[in-house]
Image (cartoon, rainbow, N blue to C red; front, side, top):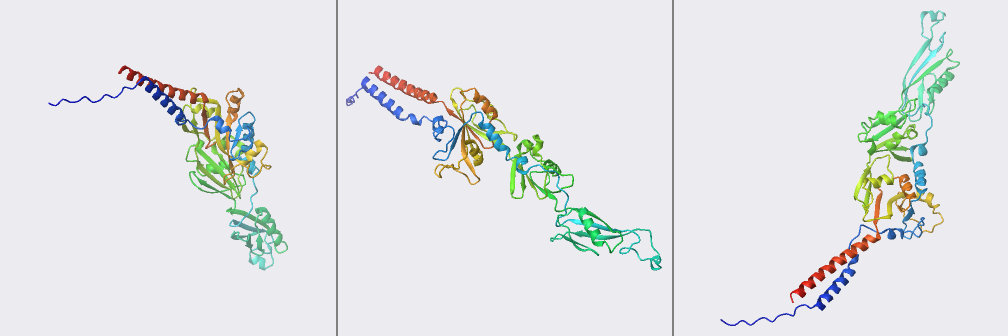
Length: 416
């Protein structure tokens, strides 16, 4: 056998090399600290989107508003202006008037001795009179597109927009002098012009005729069979002419003033629209959270996600991201008429602007403000991470890396 030559031994790592490796690893860790990850933007980053904490528009058009006592009440007052009672009012029942397509039943009576509508009898031919009043029944008349009907011996009558008793007086007036003490009786048989339309997620869509009693919003809903989905997940929309607005059905039921009287031509649409908000960041549960149509407060919203994460949350970094109507923001910040086009807020096609509400839970008054602030459908509740948490995570990462390298260096020294 040939003698195998021993392979040359590589030099063992020295303590200096281990320290060098440790230093390099530390530098690599420091350079990679920005990749440790985070739950989202910090509180400072969000506040920097506005020039002042009270709400000047920033260069990127995002509004940041401190959620202090008074802000929520201003928002609630603005939201009240979009309710049914404020937009449409609640007047008394409108009178029953005649419109195109309506059908009238007309009867004419003449006192004895009947001259125009009296029956021809032998006694009448002999010149004797009858003590019995006579009447003439006119075939039912449908109001034409021109708003007129035809009555024998009277001619064409314009009845559009008149009450039945007004038409009675017109007929009697025109027969005066031709008939003996004429009287007319006009009855509205089919009222096609005094209807409202009910659509959407109801038991039976259709049209409802309005009576002289004056039906209200919930009367129409009941006549259509009610909602097919839970009340707390339903939204009711009312359109009258070119004006329309919507409210949660639960809010209409809870507030009798919102159960307004209806008008001919109203269109009612019931929609299945569950409300929800999204919770992100340093909360105990990141999720999309449904809530009732009557609404919940910010305090209740935090309770439904288990509150703030004690180990991660920044108590000064509670934010609600929302798209608000421009009018609501103008009310709180005193209007934006004086702003230049560069300072004006971003506005969506439906006239809303991005807004961030900031609640600092470091003060006692914030606990009252969060009870008065109402969450809206589509809100994003975000809790930023406390600055010390990021430092702690970095130090933990640095410490674990350092201990690992020291352990490797000790192992190498042992094997020398």
